[in-house]
Length: 248
Image (cartoon, rainbow, N blue to C red; front, side, top):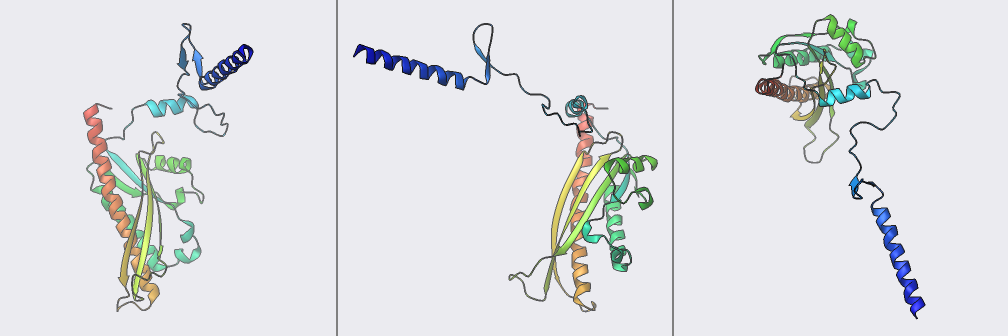
């Protein structure tokens, strides 16, 4: 009987020892014999040979203080979506007019900020067919721009919805926008806005296609209006933050 009890005690002690080792496998033992947690990971442990930013520069970017210049020269670049690529759109009068209206509205919104000195569009001749951030940044340098505003617009009609009548047309638009700082290559601001617009075909419109284009156009304008508000709020808040914290 004593041998059985002794055997049970040995098994129990062995089990406790194993569980303790498993629970403390991620810890180290200090010189005093206490278990201490492993040091925190502060940099990437992955060997990414395709990275274009060194580990040292990643740390500098994430730990450093950064702000835009007080006065900004702005350039606009529109990236064509796959939806709008093709010769048809470049020959379509309404399409070209609508693109100019979007550009003009972006220009107006940026000029509402007291920090913006001028707004211009980078000519298509300076942008390659497959633009990259590097090529866009270099084009902005040639135009002496402080920031580049890169945006992309998609719009379409909603599929049939039982909630509105057959005569109603409902469209949505999504505009993506980023601000690229030419000096540093950093992106201090980015946003994606989706808006919708619903209307009926008007008497002066010859067919449903004209009405659909108008309604999609109105949805796009709503996204630009909202983005304009956010941009001006960002520029104002960023300026105040820099002034209060003594950067630059």
